[in-house]
Length: 254
View (cartoon, rainbow, N blue to C red):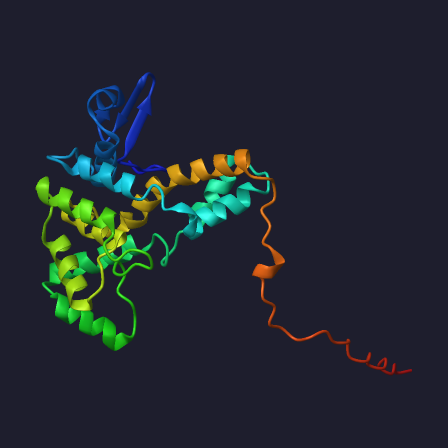
């Protein structure tokens, strides 16, 4: 019978917790965090090394120094004296289509293209005609991203690389741009059967760890209230000016 809440994820009763039907204490005894991510997102336990690659993905995106907008946001907010959860939430809110969101968008592209049997050349031509950027390719700092190279090598070694990662590599070659960490994650999670709708979750899960560490570092090592130096701000508005003369009062009718 339909209830107010309906879920297939878990059931809790007196002294019992089931997750996707499995007893939590059994999962605690035998499963890694990567296994739990896979179980939660797909409904089944990994058949092979899926949990291992998911743990590697989480490690790969945990930290990328203060150059990332999410980390900037967390540290600025933390400097105002708020609790850890508030500054971490600020960092997570900073994750969007241009920072952390490319996993979802690239995975959706790859899954749709593989299902429709569209090749890299057709995909690149379509995006060039529309004048839009293909998510998951290129990086402002890395032309040989060590995270991408390691994840791809692990996927190959653990028998998890498939048509989605291959298509991502072909698109990178067609573009002449590096397959970045978002694109690599998108290809790999697609190959292990995880829907594109979970794309942003991989960045949220892993980056939360780094953001928590940045909050603590900011609040224990730095002075409160992180201000921007005036010389780092360029004003390009109007020069100083006077307000216009006041308008005469409107006449009132008798």
